[in-house]
Length: 392
Image 1 (cartoon, one colour):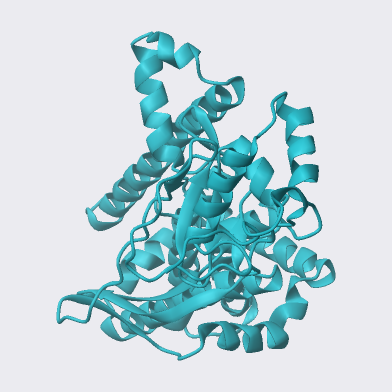
Image 2: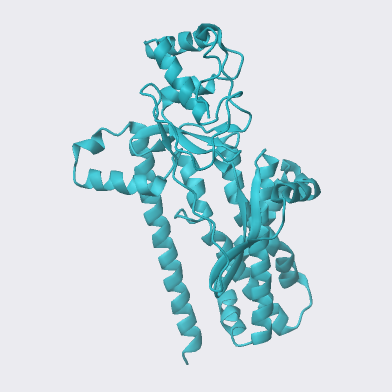
């Protein structure tokens, strides 16, 4: 395969490089003490990390600017010019990776060309390999075209994402959770009783599992609403647990941080919306005592399920939200490294940019407080259950 960059045969000065439409660029993200941008080739060419200077050049390769114009902008921004040899290296590297329009796509499994000194490119953290099918663990796709399926779902229910619908629905969710908080003691008692009734327990567990399926689909629908692409919808099992999954292929490349936060929060919101009709039945419908109590247990367990997903620890949705709020990738790992350095008063910690120091301290404190809240809630639940079971 030729690695001659497009435009090399003609004058470089007037060449107008253009990224292929399948190439996506992320916003600036913290990673350790550095600021990086992620580049993804959605046609299967892989993901890469580049620094701010490299991103400055690559982001301007839209076919409308010549290399001369891009070089002038670079010189104004960074106070140095790139000579012809450097431009050749940059274009060769981008062309070899298949990122430029007119360049051949990289052969799967082929070794990438070494990055030129002017553009440092590193592979992004690899995605977890897809699990094969086995008796104890594995996964299976449920639909052939997950993006088309999500598109149909979005056309059916996407109107609910408008403020006119979402604001009242969220207000109802807040009211429901206020009721759950006020009547937690009562709900905890009926939840303990639920485990003595196998029929109602199975029914409640089935509803909760269905809620997790809707949780995953909600991520896909909201991502689709913001221009995202859903790669897979399927089932994953680690026996005895079987869950549904929905993979958003370009989550980190959605248009804005707020859109990414909405996509990450969509699952937990869907879990709570799912509970609204059951809450109405529990509060207002004339039901038998056993059914009424089972609905109360469903409200408590479903609320715990939804709120647990918002805990800011990996791999939960709350961690994705925290990462977006901090503007960071690999947030937990970077925070641990920074806090260890800071605890040892290592001079390297003082060299972190102020934005990074603030983000890692805030996330570290938030994660500790969230973990403490989870442990306190678990302890309170254990005490309440023990009080319920022990004779007075």
